[in-house]
Length: 304
Image (cartoon, rainbow, N blue to C red; front, side, top):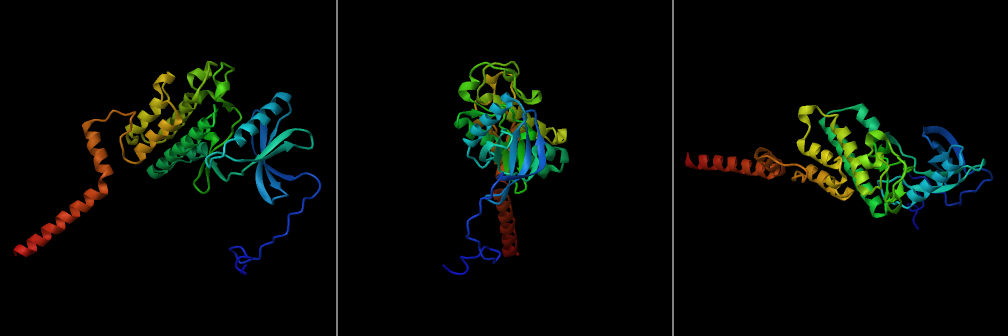
């Protein structure tokens, strides 16, 4: 092995000696990142692996303990770049359950919305909704629904990544198929969720639509693309039969808008179709126009 292989990219030699496992707690706790009705999330330093993580600990209460353990197990089943990964779980010195996960650096989509910005910034926020939909579609394929989709539960990382967090209200599709208590955040709950009825993946589709609608509300009214409003409206249809059947089809329609294709949820006028065609073929049309102008110059020079 060369000396280059024995060094990291900074040129410093790598330490191959095993990390000592010291007695006492594995995690050194830092500041509080957030509090909820069930637990608290803190920064923690993993003394074994030498990295900072986020640690969620339950508040006192037996029912909370069971819910936190359940949340950790469900979230651990979801291995997707758009879903916060679970690292470890256990009980602290007081016997309270906890689990650790990736420490996300960035801001929530809710904070990003409050920060405002120009058209390019707002378009990037729509892209985060699309990325969140892809992560939720994966969770649905794994048999899990989130039930609490809202901008404050979507993290926008410093590297531009989108991560869906807070799976505290998540449940399996089999469990959701049975009527139960009302859960979720009222402003983002589907009608069937608010009524305590049986749920399916279209409940999360409603939450995605509610988030998209909130992002679009940051636009100036006259600048809001009608096709995007149609996507949000279909996802938020009061009757679940009128919504997108799943998060995959919602994401596909949203992606179509980004790629300059027709959005299935929107009925286009002739004028809009022409504009859509011009937008999609902008580059080839520009090249053709330039070529035509150059040909005209050449012909003119040849004639004279």
